[in-house]
Length: 171
Image 1 (cartoon, rainbow, N blue to C red):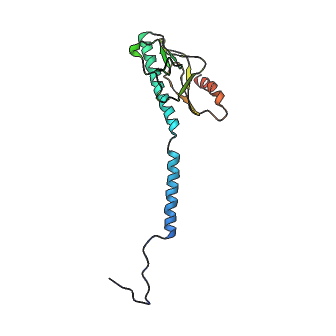
Image 2 (image 1 turned 180 degrees about the horizontal axis):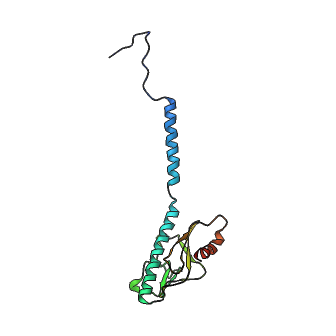
Image 3 (image 1 turned 60 degrees about the vertical axis):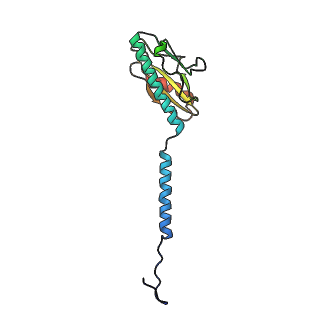
């Protein structure tokens, strides 16, 4: 083991310089900022999940209405404490779930009180606005195709024009 003699050059201490530490801290800060922007908003994710679920329920009821030659309506008003919306015209054996996964979700039919799901193959252009907190998603159909998400957030100041935007995009 070498020992330095008095008067000789001392060995350089091992460790990190201040510049190296500052570079590492800057890299961690940049990585954290990038990750925080890529994490989705939980309320938007929940609303998108509800929209996808409602699309699946509407399409299922539409298929059952056509297969059974039944007139089926979807109404976004509750029918008692166990239902957040209703499927009128479906027999009890074919009834899908009637509650939102997230209790804060509210639905509004554009230009009417209900969505007609059958029995005709062409049902007419229809859309529904789903609201949760300050977010909304519009789903709809042109009458021939399946229900799908039309749009998400309206432009700032266009909250009242969401109904008109939904109807315009379906034409």
